Length: 355
Image (cartoon, rainbow, N blue to C red; front, side, top):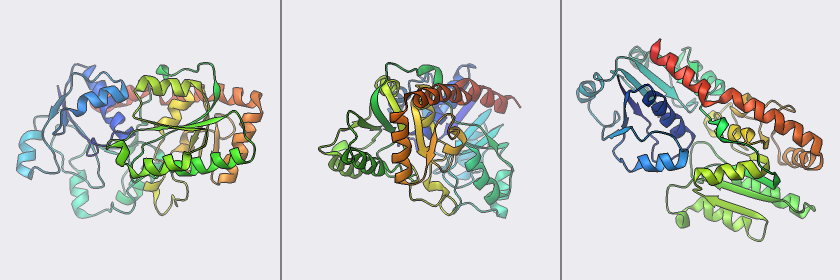
């Protein structure tokens, strides 16, 4: 059996790319031939290093459904038993024997129901979204009923070690639709230090595809972090990132801070894979009360949600000062993370292939 996967954002390695490559891993385990439609096969090793996935068997095919003409696409795609495409905000015509279109982003201000889109959707067997937050937007825009397949998190790969006084944040150091807002976390931590917090440090980790020294976001963050107990870690190997998760007591996430999720849903976190990873490692998650994060964290049970900086400070201090609370939430967070395991993802993808 032969499968083709297309992710238009493969040059910026993040949660969507982990999702795409885990689909590839799922199919490889069933002895499928898996082709990634991308013109740079050097990306494969980067993806393996970053995500620690067993995808050495995939082929990188220099083909793009966004570039090839319609007849050329038909000639290529009709040979595939299964196509899994990630939308860039448009609806593609797909010519495989079974076609799945995936939405990572709630493209509210781009997608519309139209005769053209309705005809394209007839070539697609299922539309899949990464969260109910994304699904709500996509279904309303296109007047369809999509499915939700939560992103895969290898929760069994994470476990707590001896916890240290570390607050951890993880997110890309790159401009994207979703605003990660690490600047707000630095500002908040500085406020806490100025108000007397001692013996704690903030670690901000993330990926950067361009030259680190020329990254405007990174340079701003580094300047703001000067003279503070803040460490900024760039492009860590997966093993080192796991160790950070394992040692951190608290996980912060500020994606979407200041954004209106009703008007601009693309600017908030559409799901939150790093939040699940942190929970699997026993971190207490304190994350923005927006987007897909609300589907992961159960307020007061497996973590906390916040909107204002004052709420973030107050909740964080409550966790720092109450060991019993911290340990209880940590235990619950580990249990909750299992609801988003790779095994559950495998089952959902297998059902899409076989239905």
